[in-house]
Length: 189
Image (cartoon, helix red, strand yellow):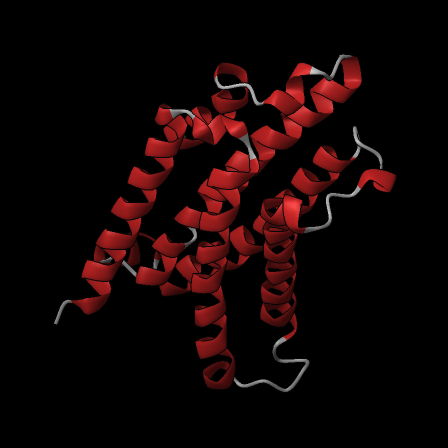
C-alpha cells in the first residue's frame, strides 16, 4: 500500500510540464491518468511476486490462490493500463495522438498496453484456443519479462516527473530489489 501511495503522490509533488498548461477537468483527467499509470507500473512490478511461489505465501494462500491472484492482477493491469491511456489521451483529443519518433516513450507505452491485452487474452482463453498449459506457460513468462523491459523504457522517459531524483531513484530501487529477490529465489538450489 505504501508503494501505491507513493506512486499516487508523484504527479502532485513532481508535476510534469504537461500539467502546467491544463486547467479544470483536463488537468484532473491528466493527473488521474498519471496516478493510474504509476499504480499500473507498481502492480506490474508486484505481479512477479505470486509467480515466485514464496514458501510463506504458498503456506498461507496455497498455489491455486496465488495463481488466481496472478490472473486477477493481470486483468486489472490491462484495465488500469487502458484507463491510464484513455485519461492521458482525452485532454489532448484523439486528433493529437502521440505518434512518431519524438513520442517513442508514448509508443512504448501503447506497445505495453497491447502486450497486456495479449497476456490477458491468451491467459483467459488459453483452453478455448486449444493451448496446453505447458505450451502456453513459457511464452507467457517470456512476454511477462518483456513487459518489464517495456515498462523500463516507458516510465522514466515518458514524463518529466521521473527526471527528478526521488521518483527515478525509487523506481530503480524498487525494480532492482524485486528483480534481485525474485532472481535469487528462482536460481537457488
